[in-house]
View 1 (cartoon, rainbow, N blue to C red):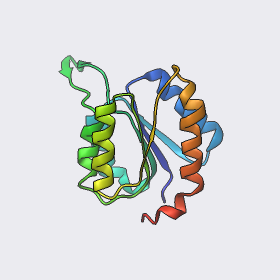
View 2: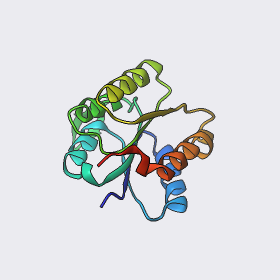
View 3: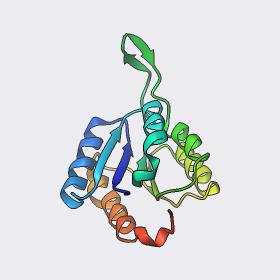
Length: 149
């Protein structure tokens, strides 16, 4: 059964705001959050059939320490590169203020047959409560019209 909303973003504040909004508005869905591309890709490999919606950021921050090693969080385009090899299963929102990265993500997703939309981040977290929320509502309310198995 499809019941997971996947979100990729490097900001803990944005992830917390998105999760809170979704938990309140759509308690029937499980929310899965990631802040880096490698973990997202590994999770998708095992769980893609259960995803009903994705929201992906492009820029995921600088390299960081993880388990005593330098860890490269990658970018949202890395996730898109993997998704290009998969059969589309859900709509994807690209939410990034990196215009070049955003355009590359959208072009690649659409060329691979994924239903894609874009939300422009603005005003700290306000965009989450207005434009992103409205896009979530539109997509989830019309999920059956995507004809994605």
